Length: 306
Ligand code: UDP
Image 1: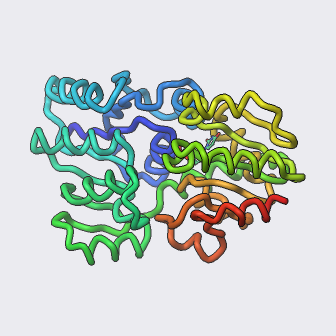
Image 2 (image 1 turned 135 degrees about the vertical axis):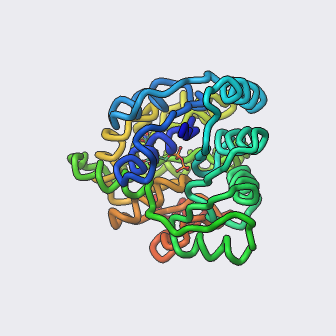
């Protein structure tokens, strides 16, 4: 038996903690980190804080490079893996799935069946991986229903929501840091559409409310966005991405959460926070009964923050 799980981005490191905690994976498993998230505060800090097992880091530089390095790595494994697990909806998920299928290895997709019904990159990744997986672990009954309705060829299983397992364990250890609004967003349409990005920043900057904003590297590495970070921002405190424990202390202490992150929506919902979602639809559908979808109506955001 030589099972492998492939991770590479912040939410996958968090997820891994829940998978081990719930004993959903064999104790002996090779953890392969593609290195998609490479900065210390998006990767290593999670491995250390959550005391995750040692990982092999492939140091991928692009999707193609990641696929090449993972192919080479899996080819040299002796014995060959008996199963490959991938998680979620990232480039790492897709690369892992493609390499598993290239070697004709059984593929398990963890967090399968989520749908936001917009063809954003994350949805493309999920649909692709769901279509080629042998086992699909659905974290909710509506995710399971999506898979059955689509008639995916693999075996669909309803499992625990391991991302939530991680959160529920870690949140108990965290003292709340009182703050009014916390903010974290990074999806393509909120960052690469610079006019939209500017309106979001203006709404935050012009607000009388105190905002704590954890700035995702997709924003700080975009030169057009970066110029806005250098200007005075009123009551907004900006921060590098934080480790899980510190971030959760802000989340726990907040009244309102502004986000486009699936994971943050899920966590803010569990904490009973007011959630403002910078999207038109979401994959964690149960959060919709308490979150406000901003979609294209940015005036709504300006009103909430005024
Ligand atoms: N998070 C974190 N530090 C931060 C911001 C977010 O640890 O500064 C956590 C957050 O609590 C959530 C996860 O990162 O569990 C979300 O990751 P991301 O938004 O990158 O991915 P998504 O959930 O959208 O797949």
